[in-house]
Length: 177
View (tube, rainbow, N blue to C red):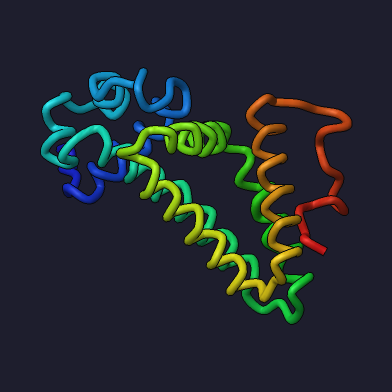
């Protein structure tokens, strides 16, 4: 007998499918039909879970940012100094880079912020993450620029699947020192 999923579980399944589809095709070129197919549901069921494609895209953005936020929070626990917390967060981020769909989704979300209907909520997620990292780590403004800047560079490196000189060694994680 198949176990029926709750609406929360189905919603999460759709968000994960949306991350993959939006990562590959961006906001405008992704159809809710493609997301539904990937999620294994009917396209009308998406609208039972989300009022429109915009809301689904924003839910996917929150999902990706929340994964980063939780990874940083877990990594920073028990660390005594700002530098130790940033280094641990940097290592945690390196582990997240393995999910190319989430990295590419982040880049698509930043590009989609050119859409006036998406700009403010996407900006709010980014600035919220910035403030959370700053609070969790105790980083100065300068350390935040370095940490987040290295993270953005790592996004590009991961998204483009670059190797060699572009891949940081264990000592060169985005520590914000």
